[in-house]
Length: 248
Image (cartoon, rainbow, N blue to C red; front, side, top):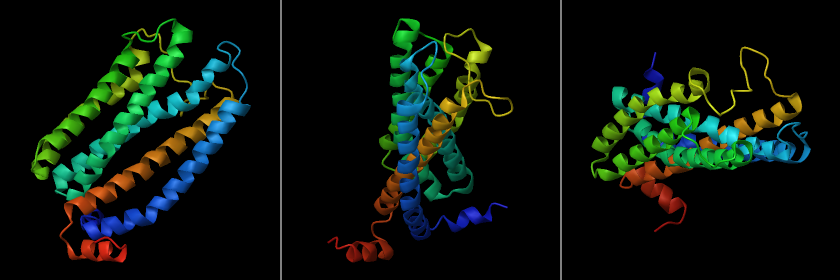
């Protein structure tokens, strides 16, 4: 069932596939984020309670949701690397970690910026905010572990175990507003039920969420390609690629 994974254990094949996908992801990310942001900031109606201050959701919500999605992607790659010993999966996990950390930081900053006019304070030790902060620390922990070992096989194992264990924080973030008393508003986007947000606000938000996902994928591919080249610098195909691009 999982034999198809092993075909991408070949670094050259993984590099070629990522090079093919990169322009598609990058172009779509720019288009979706551009449309969603312009629509949300410029044309979505003003909220009757929060006024125009709510418009930060078009950055905050995509960043927050993709911070969790990126972590799940990183943990999945780490699991594949640990179980099937596919090095390219370890490289993918290492590529996602810094991007996830930045996205999580953006989610925290935009959340604090939104919280100030709504709650009267930049920060409270709310269940949602605290668990999102823990997510940032998990990303930083994975990055630090991967960088602290010269042996990258050992580094991938150590950081991969931390990434997998940290998955327990994802449902805590997701359901924290339901499990505990929270200042943070509950989810307005529902999959099994009707969303509580006006479609004029919902559509640009969904477009931006999808766009953020594509952006993370595109940046991950750029980093992934760099990881492949860094770990396979002495391979003949890398030397040929360098010659073809005029690198001495």
